[in-house]
Image 1 (cartoon, helix red, strand yellow):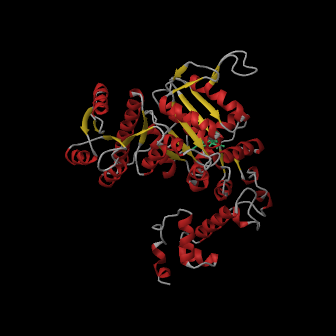
Image 2 (image 1 turned 180 degrees about the vertical axis):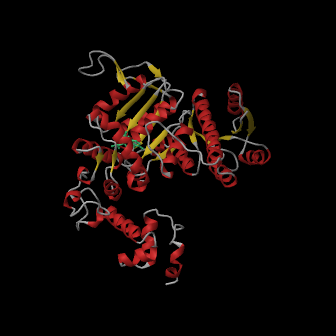
Image 3 (image 1 turned 120 degrees about the vertical axis):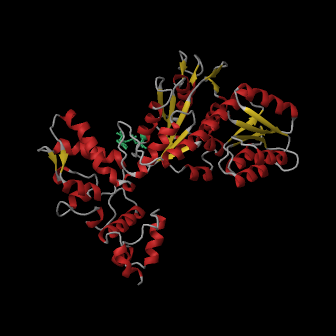
Amino acid sequence: MPTILVVEDEAKMARLLELSLQDEGLTTLIAGDAETGLRLLNREPIDLVLTDLKLPGMDGLEFLQAIKRANAEIPVVVMTAYGTVETAVEAMKAGASDYVLKPFSLDEMKLIIRKELDFRRLRQENRSLREALGRRYAFGNIVARSPKMQEVLATVERVAPTNATVLLGGESGVGKDLIARAIHQHSRRSSGPFIKINATAIPENLLESELFGYEKGAFTGAVVAKPGKFELADRGTLFLDEIGDVPLAIQVKLLRVLQEREFERLGGTRTLKVDVRLVAATNRDLRAALEQGSFREDLYYRLNVVPIDIPPLRDHKEDIPDLVDHFIRRFAPESGKAVTGITPAALKVLLGFHWPGNVRELENVIQRAIALSSGPVLDVPDIRLDLALATRRPAPGVESAVTSGFFPPNGMTLEQYEEEIIREALRRANGNKSQAARLLGLSRNALRYRLSKMGVADETDDNPSSAGDRAS
Ligand SMILES: Nc1ncnc2c1ncn2[C@@H]1O[C@H](COP(=O)(O)OP(=O)(O)OP(=O)(O)O)[C@@H](O)[C@H]1O
Ligand SMILES: [Mg+2]
């Protein structure tokens, strides 16, 4: 039975929390101040701390920092008064798992505690799973041989059965939709609805009514009442695509639904309660949006309970051969062609490309190749990469996108182009960094610096065979 430490100086409030948590089958310990709280934490096994931010003596924020120094893993939920959201956000930055604004409903509090306990258990299980040897994650329609994608699936598998809000990040075409659906399918809600709404596809003035619905007469043209996506998603999953594009006015309303699980239809007075699991996705850097003030911090922290970042295809090219097979098996039957495979040379062209449009682009290229192919095996002439580059190539089987042309191919930024050149140099040098640096006319340190910027770990150092090289 999980044990919760409640730190609250108001005796009445503390008692109320104690009773309702016990109701939930949780063991509770009560402390009237942070100092007592810390003593209890040292003595007892505690699974979660629920603390007021305003406390006599050491305040809640210091208390939180002290807990995190001692044990970063223990979830801490903070309680704070309305009108002090900034403090709540401070607390989230200092490592709080979530917050509730006073006065709160006990239901909301229980929901948050359940979610945090679920997530804590999940993290523990995840660790033991990863330790268990060679476990591989497999989902029917998702190709994920690479360690990077395996990690994505590991998180999906563990998080799916909980109700935790998930924030999917990644460039366009990396598979955010696919992963959102997988989360739903592997959840206890899989027999319920999966409802998707895309914030960019809907004009701002309609987005609100799409999300929350409207009553008859709410505005001109509202001749009948209409339920919103939140209502439609009851007992299921709501997938909020392109969350970074939701206007601020609607962000406030989303925050309220996340906090209280209730809302009203436009023009309505009835308060509706829903049981919805939220999965959000963005291909923008939400942290930058936070800094610009176009995205609310409190909403960000609510959404970002479990972040899953899906890597761009160029960072897991090992998956390309499987993806190609997967798409051939999917598209050959519907195109009526008996295509069964791809030649090594054609595969090499695909492996050399930088895939700015990620898996979706690869999917399109294969679909087109099948349409063009004349034999049972896709070959180099069937592969039409979107960028003019491919057709400019003098001969098939060229090593990489960088080997022909002089300018960055369309759709590629200078930075991506530079990265591609560096990767190409490393390939030509068989991973030997000194040799790659020489090819690029860079010092070893300059190359190291660029590699670290690209997120290429430094321990993947030169081949042992190049030990002599290293001394130079
Ligand atoms: N790992 C994968 N295995 C198999 N198919 C994949 C994989 N990743 C993506 N796909 C396929 O690639 C296409 C694009 O994926 P998806 O629509 O999920 O991308 P997205 O990240 O949502 O893109 P956007 O940001 O443009 O909305 C889909 O047809 C999807 O089925
Ligand atoms: Mg998508």
